Amino acid sequence: MAEQGHEGGIAGHLHYWTLKIDESNPFMQIHLDTMLVTLVVAGGMFAFALWLKGKLVAGAPTGAQNFMESVVGFVDDTVKDNFPVNNPLIAPLAFTIFTFIALVNTIDVLPAFLLGHVAGLFGVEHFRPVPTNDLNLPAAMAVSVFILVLYYEFKLKPVHFCKELLFEPFTNLVPGFLKPVVMPINLILKLVEEFAKPLSLSFRLFGNMFAGEVIFLLIAFLLLSGGPVSMAAGFVVGLGWSMFHLFIGLLQAFIFMILTVVYLSIAHQPVEH
Amino acid sequence: MSIDLTFIGQIVVFLTLVYLMKKHLYGPMSELMETRSKKIAEGLAAADAGLDAKARAEAEIAEQLKDARSKAAEIVASAERRAAEISEEAVNRSRTEAEGIIDAAREEVNAELGRARQALRNEVADIALIAAERVIESELDAKRHAELIDGIVSNGFGHA
Image (cartoon, rainbow over all chains, first blue to last red; front, side, top):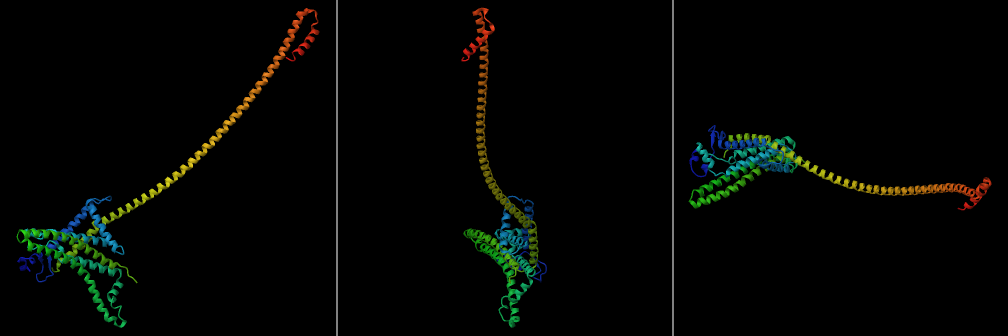
């Protein structure tokens, strides 16, 4: 990997600033750029929260409070539309997912190499500024959501959930003597279905953001390296893609949020008899 | 593009962030918004109730005004009636009083007239006596002639 990093081209820009704890084990490494940007964004959100908390007014809101209230109201409405019962954790979770992903995705609008060059000044060889381009972040969020879903499934309707895993939809269709045979197949298919949720959730976000960055890099390499005309075209195309990508980033944040709410609301759905 | 320790780190960051956002941003804000919307709803309900009360009060005022007006008209009518009665009574009383006064005056006049007539009669008798004395000198019996003259006077002046 290190040799590849010294090569030019797009692949050379897709390396992380990595701290290898154990060279022989690929799991024992940490992406410092992802962690750093995430911590900065999270810290910024926390600081903003503390700042805003201090100046909340009960009357007519203005400025930052007004804006945040519209975001909170939007998330609240979405959760209330989808949720059969009231769970005080869901709305803050959805809100955090939405704002955090939207903020992180928006970093992608900065010129592709800017933060990399800034990091280069500090002697960092590779720097990927957008943490959602790192599968670890979407996967971490998706798995957290998945664990929450499983927690609520087992907490709210354990018997029903296990029954569903074993009997729905196939086992119920076959006659009694075939049930033991069909049950494992059913279980395997249901497990695939369940595990597809976090997988699709994380890969959707990761894929969109990663592809967006690759397209930025493509624009940069194909157009910006040419003559003046090609550079001007590259600038215009890059600007257009920036806007589109900004929209995609917001959209993906919304999709992640709404799917989280939907998965959790399925887990909260009361048992029908 | 590999799952590694970053994954664990991201889970920690994410869950911490969810907790912090819930505690410091979402919680206070949604509480605030709920309080506000409750307050607004209460205000609107109060405004509605106030409008209702106002309409009721206006209706009541109109009704009372109507009552007061009719009562006032009644009072005025009865006062007029009473005034007419009083003035009629006063007229009647003054008429009786005037009649009384006239009667008394007439009686007095009659009495005075009677007295005056009697006095005149006495005086005339005296004068006639004196005149007769003067005429016939004092030869005549005063007593007999007095009777005679008296009779003449009463007959002669009885029709006066």
